Length: 291
Image 1 (cartoon, rainbow, N blue to C red):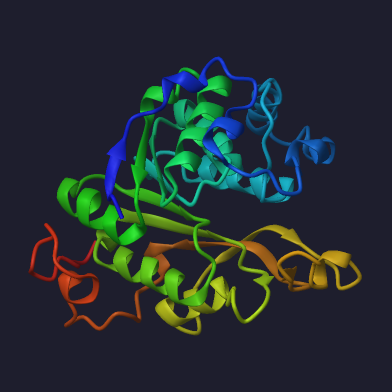
Image 2 (cartoon, rainbow, N blue to C red):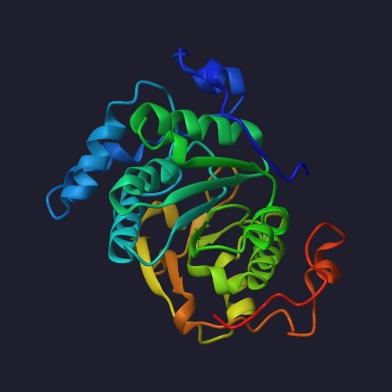
C-alpha cells in the first residue's frame, strides 16, 4: 500500500474516454443525472452543480442514486462554515466527487480523495477538472487506505475539521478498520457520512456497512438518513444476477453521523494506533483527545 499523495495525470485532459487508458471498468453505465428532473427546483445550488456536471463529455458510471447526491449537497450546505475539508474515501468514477467539488468554492473547503486504486483517483480528478476547473487545485489525491491516510496525513497535519464521506470497502471488517483508524483523530472529524448502508449480498462480500457503524459507535448511535429508500416491491431489493447484491427495503442508502452527538465505543481507550495498525510514523502515545 503506497500511502502517499500522487499528482494528477495531465495526459487525460485530451482524451474522449479516459477510463480506457486507466482501465477503470464501466459496469452498468448508470448515470444518476438521467433521473435528475424530479430534484430540480428546491435547491439552486444543486441545480447549478447538476448543470455543470451535465456538460462533461466523457463516459462514466455512477454508483449512488440521484437522491443520495441531492441529499449530499444539502448536508454540505447545512454544515457550511463548520468544516475545512471533505475527505472522500472510495471514489470509483467520481460520482460523489463531482457533487462535493461543486460545493467546494461555494462553502470554502478543500478536498482529499482517498482510494487504494490510483487509476480511480485519476479518473475522478479528471471528472472534477472538466466540470469545475476552478476547484481542481483544491483537490489532493491520496493513494492508500484509511489507516495509511490517518497515519500519513491526519496525525501529522493535526489541523482543521473534516467531513469524512465513506464509500470505500463495504465489507464489515474493512469498514470497522477504517472507522477504528478515524477514532484516533476524532477531534478533527466533524461528521462521518456513510454510503450503502442498505446494501447486502453474498457471504463472500459481507456487505454490512450499517452493522459496522453499529459495532464502532454502539447500538444507539445518532444519525440522519439520506439517499434512496427502496420499496419492498422494487426489483433492486432482490439479489442481482451479477454479484448477488441487493438493497434492504425500507432502509436508507446512507447515514450522516455528527461526531458532536456520537462517541466511539471501539477501540478501547487503552489501545494505540501502532498497536492496531502496525509501525509507522504515527506518534506512539494515545492521540485521541476530547474535541
